[in-house]
Length: 301
Image (cartoon, rainbow, N blue to C red; front, side, top):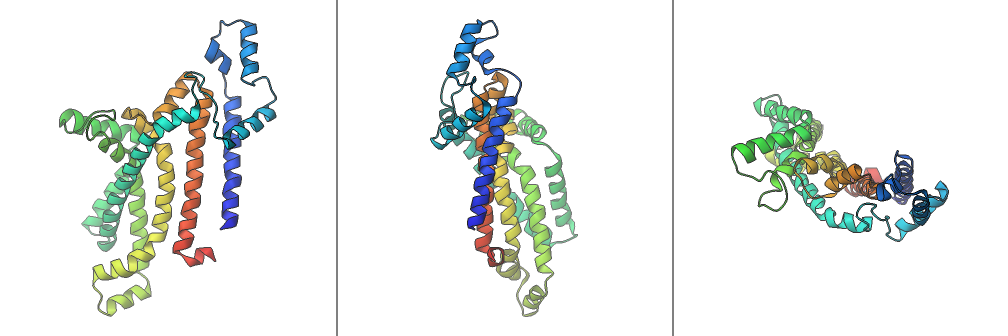
């Protein structure tokens, strides 16, 4: 376990370094963003010196690491506010969207996976397979407008976009969670079928256990480990996947903040949001590995 934590620390350091150097080498000059291209040379050099852009890249990297250790992610070039404060304002909306999408994944994947495994090669299994195929094939930027067209414009049940109206979270959560629910459903079905084909499962059925009893008491607990691992990884991927969904539904989260920062060439803010998403994925990956070790002693060994 300790070695896994140390590996994660090394990966986080690599992520921070990669994000910094990518932000340093992208085309464009932050000074141009702040002063404009018509600013005088003296003003440009003065601002460059004040921002530390005249220092060697290695020195700027060490300064960036030191700032992160103290919670300083830099200052937005456009809004002249700390990047951490801007992210903190938008993060609750993204966490609400990611949490709702995760519930969509669980409430869709588990019933469909159970039904598909119990009715293998029958029509319920084929319907669940059709859902999995459509869910993995339809991208978020197409599914979102389709849901808006159906439930907001035609039926008028739900708001088109934004976060103020009642029920505004439903369509973004379904859009974000559907494709990942399809993947989880297929994983649960495959894992259940593998467990149910074992000799000890046939023995349990031969001793008089009903289908649902054998499923809940024996098959499902043993089939959950790969599904839990996948769900943990998907939870980390929800933050990155929320970018497109937030843009489609004008959801005020860090995804919309990132797109706005890219359009304004606000490099410190871009670095901060990308770093948050990447580090969240790495940390959730670590937590998933540790949870898998707690559930299965063979992994710890």
